[in-house]
Image (cartoon, rainbow, N blue to C red):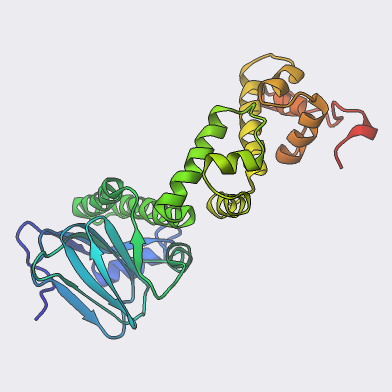
Length: 305
């Protein structure tokens, strides 16, 4: 016999259905709305069985103990430091482990953005288990969610809950893109190196060696983690630093180009225009409030095509 709630020290908030329906028709809350949220400490005999699934997506974060979740035909164990995300309308069942019952933060969410979050977070819809890189940050987001609903049921509080939940779901999606912790640490090491060494002349092969990966594996893993190639990533870092220097200093453009790793000012100008949609001098004038001269600072025949 499962217990739905009633655990000593628990926190629980459930919005009334009329309020849920009204909120979902509002411009912002209709995108992502937290309808239920809570905290169940050492929830012995806790469990739920939903043969038809729930109308909301269900998020469960385990901060101690353990539990088991069945989603369709998949069964996963949920240990401390992991989470599960159960999509709306999918048959599921979950329960605390008998010998070491879980302590969980949890929430139910609805709204137009939920399907896209499910796709971004789960990857494999049959596996609801989410690797959580920062359990403290995730628990804080859910605590903020609960606190917002405990305050009152005004739109302001509902928006605070939505903001905290959006942050949590986005972090889950980000962690999935970064891949397993070991691979992410290797790519993160290279990212840190590039951020600190904008003038580097290292090749992709050299950076792959730094990550202790083959060049092909490193290139594929880097792109799957960041969404861009290694060289595109470095170009964007350099462009961001150049924009900062163009805005905050009077340094000549050639000097700025050299400071971010480009010995050829013309090549820098071409890349800057491609990434920013305008020349470096146009960007500087725009940032300082001057009218932008439509004429480029390069001769017509030398412009980037």
